[in-house]
Amino acid sequence: MDRKRGDGGAFGQRISDSDVLDALHEQPDPVATAGELAEVLDVSSETVRRHLTELHERGLVDRKTVGARAVVWWALDADGSAAPAAPLRGIVGLLDGEVADAARERSKEWREAFDGEVDERLEGQ
Image (tube, rainbow, N blue to C red):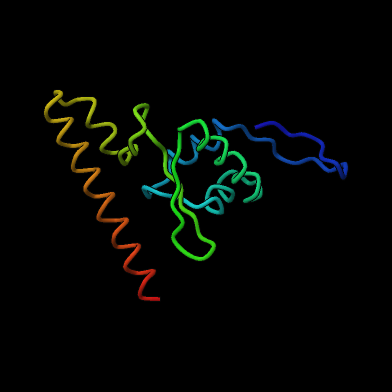
């Protein structure tokens, strides 16, 4: 991150798409909001949102609206599938192809169940 003088003359943090992507990968949860990432990066939510939108357009992250104004974001693997949680990401590299595929399938099932639970909670509000 660089410091850059803004329009008002004050210095602010300048971040890159890579900074945002790194912060997203380091989150303890499988998804994060722009506000959570902004807090970690010490920048505005709008700044993070602009970077997340760029990353989304490049196919590196995906998003889901989970409320009237709430959006969660997650990183995607190179093949466009949701990146597994950090512990699984480390383990999959140690597994043979068949076991790694099974781990990825379980991760996909978990994400679908998570999405369903979020949808149910929103319907109940």
